[in-house]
Image (tube, rainbow, N blue to C red; front, side, top):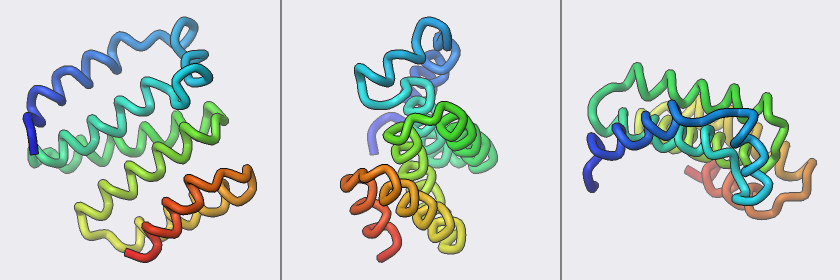
Length: 124
């Protein structure tokens, strides 16, 4: 699985260093907002370390920020990772709600990659 404690430390640093005025536009260059991506990976690292409450909090924050940004790819990324978090938790109801949300946005915005991810997750 790697080194989730080391990853957590680096991801916490990435989240702390993020400055919206400076970094938000990078989503257009890199495809997704760096803070949201860091929060998503931080959620998984925390879960692997047995910190389920922190993992859920980071996942919720990633979803909230992704929705507020209005950047479709960032939202798809956040929903996909938070779905993974809920798969780890064996919470099928949350997975289904999020995957249906992702599918709806993907179809509306014509994003075939996120549509296929949503359909795959719904198959779980």
